[in-house]
Every structure is written in structure tokens, then in C-alpha cells.
Length: 340
Ligand SMILES: [Mg+2]
View (cartoon, rainbow, N blue to C red):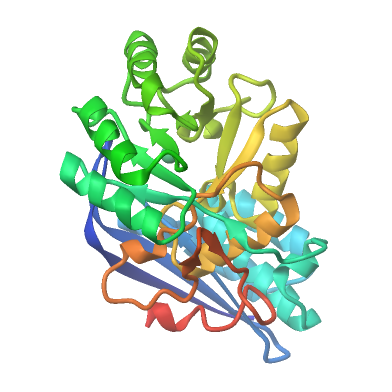
């Protein structure tokens, strides 16, 4: 196969603020696999939080293996690349391109390749990353007007209580409010903060603290529903249940196959499962939508993140709080112009 690897630094409309800092642009790596039959599969990985060249170097390590195959058998090619690349983001790009290629060859959408029975629209949450009350309230009103039923608010930023009160007032009583602390708190801080925020009405809190034991303690000591996010990547995270739910991401799980496997393992030990993006481009979001068709997430997914990018038309817009699975074969039609 001919193999093309490209890099893009996609600018955001506004800084994406969390307790871990502020992000203005996202490094995205795309991988094109040109089969000998003329069929082309395209994959992508968001390299959010990594040095720019790390995913590129890891993908370059896979170039020869990919070039020597025609993309099949998919699991074997992916395993060979996973041995070389190690980095889950690079493995994800390969996995997405191989799934796209296989589904295009079979002339079916990826969700069908995964054995899903239907491609129902996926329930998604809006996200507010504003650090001030007015900005957060404006995001909440916008989410409500747009028909979202769940809004995620970053916490651990200071003035959480004031900001959350403003969000609840603007969002109305019907909106599920999801918190994400990105591991900012210590156990006592998390317990105190979650108890203090209880009157606001919280759907769940993602990653209040870092580490499985700490998360288990917070889950035990508060009434709040607690979800793993960053800590889901820790060894053994999905082998025993530390808290209530787990947020899975295509780039961190090593692509579609890795996310399906992680969801299966997580559910086996009793976690509820939902999906989110790492500020992925349309190919990564599409992959997560196809996975959602197969696993049917237990709660709204954090996949409505494409509007965060500046100057690019969103090919997968949320309507009334849901995103449709893209039409067409493979990962879907009309997803690649976005990268141009
Ligand atoms: Mg999170």
C-alpha cells in the first residue's frame, strides 16, 4: 500500500480551559492507506497533550509494515503496528484507517462492519470551558437553546460554586450537569467540593482526583456518581470497579478495536460506559459514533467538540443534543475536506 502521513495544527475558536491548563490548538495526525485495488482508507489521531512529533514518529515506525501489506487481515496488521508504535494515539490512526479501508472494500458503513444493528443518532453533551460565571452561563443558555440535555462544566478552576450556580440558573432544571475536574482535587478537596455542589444537581463528576484508589475513596465518601477518565489509562483500571462509570476515548484506547475491547472489559466489572473525544477531528468523532452504535453508551457522550475549532465547517453537527452517524460507506462521506 502507499502510505501518506500528514500533520495539522487545528486552531480552536477560544482557549479550551481545564484544571490542567489552556489549549489554543490541537495537533492532529492523519494517515491515508491506498490499497492496491484503488480503495483508500483514512484514519486520524488527536495528539492533544503530546509533543507535536511524537505521534508522527510512532506512525513513521509503522510505515514499512503498512506498506508491505494490503491492509488485511486487519487484526494482524494492527497488532504488528501496535508492537512497533506502542503509542495508543498512533495505533488509533492505523486502526481507523484499516477499519475505513475494510468497510469501503465491503461497501458498508463501519457501524455495520462492527455488527451494530442500527445507526441511531448518538446522545451527546455540550461542554463549557469558560472559567468565568458570565461565560459559563452564556454557554449553558446556548446549550439549552440548542436542545442539549447534558452540559459538561470544567471544575477545579476556582469559583466553581459561583460558576455552577450561574450555569444551573441559565440551563434550567431539566439539564443534566456533568463536572470534569481533570484530576485537580485531592481526596478531601473532592469530597468537600462535591458535597458543596450537591444542591446544584450533578449528573456525575469525571476524574475528581487522579488514581484508582483515590477515585474509589471519593466514590465511597460522596453521593455523587464518579467517572474515570484520565485514570482509565492506568494499568488494571478496567479489571476491577473503582467507581461508577468510565469515559472512553478513541485516541487513548488505540482506535475502534481498542475502545470496543475497553468497553467490554469495563462493563464486565460493572462500570457504566460513555465515550468522549480528545478534541478529535471529524474522522475521530465519526469513529466514536460508529463505536457508539455498537456499544450503546449508558450516558450522553462528549463528542460535540467539533464546533470548538475555528474556521472549519462542522460536518457532524449536533441537532437537539444528538449527532447522526455519518452516511456513506467506511467512516462516512464528507469527513476529509475539513482537514484541507
Ligand atoms: Mg475528562
